[in-house]
Image 1 (cartoon, rainbow, N blue to C red):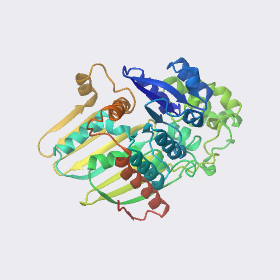
Image 2 (image 1 turned 90 degrees about the vertical axis):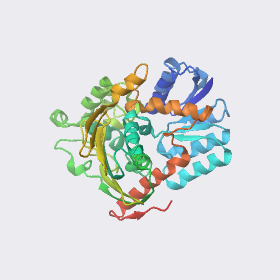
Image 3 (image 1 turned 135 degrees about the vertical axis):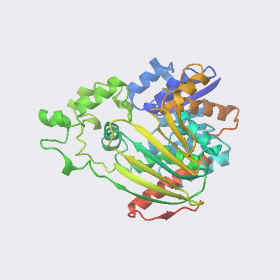
Image 4 (image 1 turned 45 degrees about the vertical axis):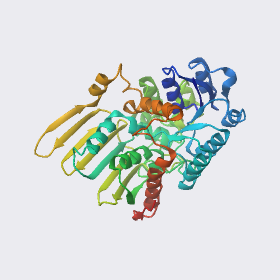
Length: 420
């Protein structure tokens, strides 16, 4: 039986706990989390003993090595210190993306893991989604010929961006990570994985366009509770409406503090960041950004991130010399055109249902969360070969691309050469 702990029991930590329930050879035995209600969830819903629900990471680490591996699902700026501590205690780690807040910190984790002979795997969960797996198969089998260009768009959703990147923990890039890393290192990893070529340069444009005081509607106030009723009615970011609705739908995301709490009380008493007006926050997270990548063979890729969509979803368009494929990961349908020959629609959901007993496609990121967990458990036990696994060694390159993209953005879109 593999014994596991989760440090940081927010939305991502609780998601891993939920998936572990179905694993007969793995057991969650400890949780470290400062939020009382979240520790209570660990105890009452997931059966973690009260004495093993620690109030913070320091309490957990002070106990020494008490299990086989640990999931680190804390805030970005905490990853490096916690990962280094865990490694020196002898833990293997599943580390929430991004690995750390700088290239230097990422390299520290890699070097320490290699020095100690311990395993660190990143949660680049999109690699595990069958949707992207089928695209990888088309590319690997040369069905599309040589890949010339790839275009990805991450639509963050207006309410999700406001919750996490305007009101929430990632609103301050200095205290967390640049938005292109915090939100899009998944997408940069997918580009690198699908292209499977050396990225030699990057350029980027973007900025904070909308969530600023000058765009505040008439009658707005620093907190939603103090806005006029008419202003609240016409504001799509009205905390009284958007968060209770999203909690009811089960799609809130970004912070577990909303779950299990009285949202209206939080807003009325100004106890939480979610009650602040999105136009009057101390935020600098970028709400729109484009990233251009060039590769050693002359091929290119492009990533767009924006905060202005109704839903959270990702789209991809791959252009090859013999054909093209495009689709939306939420729709889970791939549209494949082989030039001069066939047009085909691949229903990924249907194909996966035929392959597996029951469906795992609703288990987060198009099934990716479930398959990532299975691969991590395999990694720390049998270490079987894997086409999708992102070890800390493998993950460094996509992190470098992201940090260099931010360097370019701050330099007005200057081309930044990458020499790995």
